[in-house]
Structure formats: structure tokens, C-alpha cells
Length: 274
Image (tube, rainbow, N blue to C red):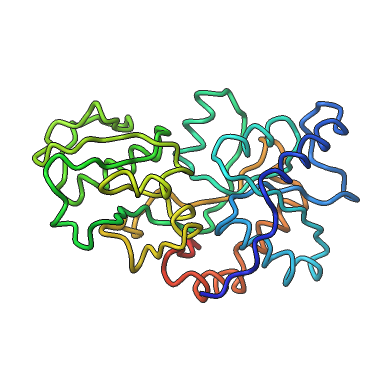
């Protein structure tokens, strides 16, 4: 699979953000038109998609991008809120809603760009039917992705969940567990590393790809893409959604060129959502 080179390290991102915050006066405002539009992103595939936009499409549109990579799911929203970023591209609407409720952010989600199906992976198994009784299964520890992981396990008849209505299910809502699975919650970015210590793990698509796992080939079970509400999208501070440069980036992210880039470079592990 051909992908652009990843060169920005988390340490560089942190140093960059510290500098930007120090110079920004502490106010969360869209960067001036003569400054780059600062967008935070997970390294794979978000930053790769943005890098394609920057290298192939942005000049003609008159858009100057600065891409800041993050290896976790918390700091991109912190940086957007404090004005270190103008936008971020790493999250889904359910995750955003949970973050707004818990941290009090006032953000606006724009249109879906792509979907990364969650998958169940194992280093020791090649068939889901071989998952042993009492197996330990790691899932993400944030509420949104934990709920997705539990629903994936349920969809594959490994557990059943109590009816939680509109609320996201948690491990406490497991009411049927025929294999007596031990559910271990792990920070999402660490899940690929946990594979050596557990029987199986439910891993977010971006972290799976970054760990050289192919969702289409390596997953024992994969989240359905059709009707999936967990598309990834651009998020901005409320009030910035109509800014000209945000509109330019949105248009480029939903272009035929980006669709083709996604389809040709991710072998079904990342799917266009537009």
C-alpha cells in the first residue's frame, strides 16, 4: 500500500503547540489570513489525507495548511479549544458529543469525510471461532469507542448487551457472556501493543493501519461500514464553520481527488463517506 511518508513526531507537535499558544494571546480565534490554517490530525490516515490535500490541491485553491500530528484522542480537542489549532480532523460525531458533554467544548462538526471500521485482531488466532473460553479481550477505554467495540463483539455473538436506549453501552451492560470473556479497557493508541498480552483486541482503524495491520485482511471481525454513524470529519470552534478558509478546506476534503486517494491507498481499510 502506497502512502505518503510520515515525518511529524508527537514531540514536534507538542513543541509547536506550546509555541503557538505562547504567541496567541490565549484567545481561541481563527488564525489570521496571512498565517497557515493549523489543523490537528491523527497520523494515519487523517494527516496523510491532509498532506495529500496540501501537496496536490491547496496551492491552486490558495490555501496554506499547517498539519500538526497527535498520537492520542484528547489533545487535539484541547488544542482546538485553546486556539492552538484552527480545526482538527480525527474524530467522529459520537466521540465529539461525549467530549463536549464532559469537557464543555463548544465545537461544530462539519461533513463526514471517511470511515475507519473498528476491527477485532489477534496475534495468536486466525479464526474468531477459536477464541477460547475465558479469553481476555482488550477494547478502547474512551466511552464512545468502548461502546463501538462492545457492539462489534455483540454483532459477532461473543456477548449480549442490555438495552441502554440512547445511552452508549459500557462493560457493565454486558448481560450475556457465554465464553466468560475478560474485558480489559486500554487507551486506544496502546491497543496494538496490547496484542502480545491479550487473546484479542478491538482496535480503531487508524491505529491498526499505523501498526501495519490490514483491517480487510487481518481482522477476525470488522465493523460494518454501511449505515455506520462513526464517520471522521473536520471539527472547528463554533462560529468558525463559515470562515472562508474552513470552507476551502472542506471543499477540498470532499473532492473527487480525495475520494480517489482514499480508495487507491487504503485497500478498504478507510472508506470515503461522501
